Image 1 (cartoon, one colour):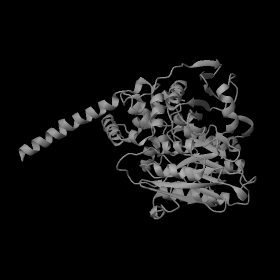
Image 2 (cartoon, one colour):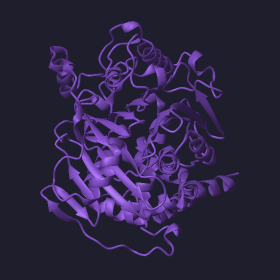
Image 3 (cartoon, one colour):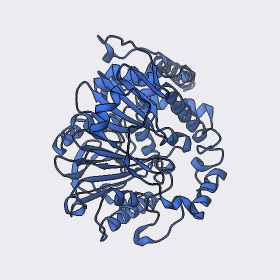
Image 4 (cartoon, one colour):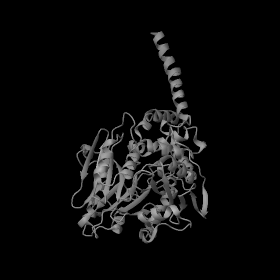
Amino acid sequence: MKKILGVLAVIIFLVIPLILAIFLAINLRDTAPDAMDGIEDVTGEVETIDGGLKGIKNNRFRFSESGLYELYVEGAPYERGVYGGKLTKELIRSQESIFVDMIKKLVPSETYRFFLKSVIYFFNRKTASNIPTENIQEIWGISRSASKDFDFIGSGYMRILNYHAAHDIGHMLQNLNLVACTAFASWGEKTQDGDLITGRNFDFYLGERFAKDKIVEFVNPKDGIPFAMIVWGGMTGVVSGMNKSGLSVVINAAESEIPEESATPVTLVAREILQYADDIASALRIARSREIFVSQNFLISSARDAKSVVIEKRPGETEIFEGKDNYISVTNHFQGLLKTNYLESGSELAEFSLGRLKRVNELIEGPQKMSVNRTVEILRDRSKFGGEEVEPGSEFAINQFLAHHSIVFNNTKKIMYVSTSPWQLGKFVAYDLEKVFKTFPFKAKNDEIYDVERMIPSDSFMETEEFKKIMESRYNGTFKSDDIRFSKDGLNKQDEE
């Protein structure tokens, strides 16, 4: 028995750490993936075109007076990655610094962080094999601009690749409620002009620093449909976006089990849909062709179909849910064939999700016909079902004062309205996709590309004493005081803005 125990001790204290060290060493090496075989390098450096307008060939990058960054990339996948990475290099480093600080706050123990890193790398070891070659090439291109400051975590490529699963991992950490989104669409007789209009709040909150540097990215790929999306530095996946065919995709997490292994990150499934689907049928085919490791709602709005549907997807199953009466809405649970007894489980998160869904439906079903402005009003709504007042930040409200971004698509007219700081309360600036793709690549002056005349003004609520109190509580750390993300020295640190 002593001999057996001795062998076990050797395995536990020597062999397992050695295997772990070898595994991590492999992931720390910056080795090109197999997808890069035969791909030639690309040349070109960032040039200043006019003031804050930068460019490499036809690729462009600028900072708008609205507070949004604007990026245009074109060409083959690796080319897009390299040029996009070079143009946004500082934002990539900034966002990675935020991710690292977030992990240190959520996991204070250095030993446990090392263990967690090891587990995540091991869990995601097959991720690349589940990602299309095109996405791998683009991610590798972007990773050429990743900072060396964080090589202790892993190679630039492995870090950027794994960050693409941040939404999935945040969804898995349900007790932190990092993901609590709301989305809806209306069309036909439900809207003033019969247009298809989609709205969403992306309530994926990792602090003000994370939400600050949003990029409105316009992608003109060598293959597929040109599209626009809202991202952050280093991100190539889609959480909210629309293509030139008038098809939009937004993702909302749904109830999930703890996965046994990794698969395709949901943001890259959404990206594939946005780049290659021009109607609901083609979006569904793509969704069914990919395996994911967390449950997800994909709200698909299609100008060609003149309606919206929700593709409900969990590991091993994909179904479609259709709305009624010319509208559809979705929060963070399934409503169709994949529906479970989650809503009857007594879970607080389930109550929040159902509460927001009921409030959205209540507002859409009101006497006022839907429009872009009305959609923005609903996204800014601060009450719960029945118009009952709730504490600022309540997950029962559509507006929780924490949205990374809020966005409205007029799918029919192919115009995208993006919120500016703070959250969904600032003005919404309008991007006409046809116009932007025609002019942005050849831009020689550093002037605005959004349509000034279509801008939606800031919420008048920002002029009230109540708003001032909310802002004060955000700065002094008393807003949702039981949540580390809002503590004065937590993820919400203001002194680093």
